[in-house]
Image (cartoon, rainbow, N blue to C red; front, side, top):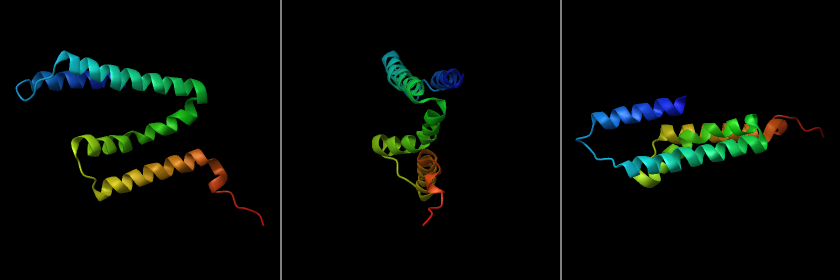
Length: 108
């Protein structure tokens, strides 16, 4: 459902701003093929292999990769708040994936 809502918003924004930029059909098809189809194929394959709980943890990395690719492709700069947020997300994913080993007291 989220995919449909996102696509609908994208179509409305393109329709409202036709004068500002031009988007070809091949651009939209390329975005759909690479961004959506490939992403969902990888996602569902990982759900099938390792399960829902282990795969869902990695959905938290979406903002980190969005900021990273915005910096690499668009030349955006990182702000301290974004770096802090990325550090919190990466720490949370690490702690979640490492299990309870991090919190267990070691007996001498």
